[in-house]
Image 1 (tube, rainbow, N blue to C red):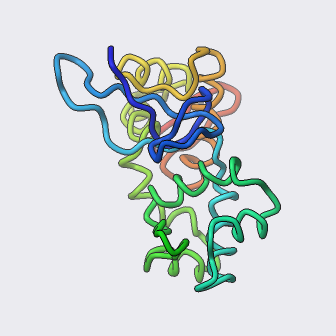
Image 2 (cartoon, rainbow, N blue to C red; image 1 turned 90 degrees about the vertical axis):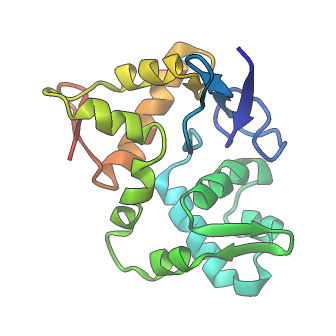
Image 3 (cartoon, helix red, strand yellow; image 1 turned 30 degrees about the horizontal axis):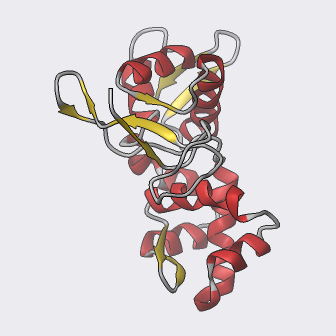
Length: 197
C-alpha cells in the first residue's frame, strides 16, 4: 500500500511540509478499493494546552510572530513546535505564511475567550480523526475503548505510530485531551470507554 506522511506525530517520518518531526501521522493515499483517504488528522502527541499557549504567544507577539521567535517564547525547540503549528493550523486558529505566523479570525476569538475555549473547537474536531471515528463508535451502547478506535483507523490506513501499543496510547491521549476537553466525548475511567455526548 502506498502512503504519505501527514501532520507530525510519532513514527519519526517526514511531515506534510517535508520536515522531519516528532514523527508523522501515516495516512494511506487510498483505502478500500481506491476510495480517497479520510480528511484531516490531528497530529499525535499534541496537547490542547500546547495549542492554547501557541495562540496566546502569537497574539502577544503580533506582527513579529515568526516561527523561531514563537519557539523561543514557548521555551522549546523548533522540532517540538512543528506538530503544534500543524494542529493549530488544522484547527483554523493560525495561518502559516512566509512572513511568519498570524492568527485567523477564529484564532482571535479563541484567544479572547475567557472560558470554554475547547468547546469552540468542537465542530472542527468532530470532522478530524481520531475524533470522528470515536464519536461514531462511541454512540453505540456502552461506548468504545480507545483500542477499538485505533484499530478501526489502522484498517482505514491511519496510524500515529508503527508499534500498535504506542499507537493505541497516542490515540487514547488525543481522545482524552481533545475529545473530552471539547465535550465531544465523555470518558468512563473505570470501564476505559469513551461515549459520544
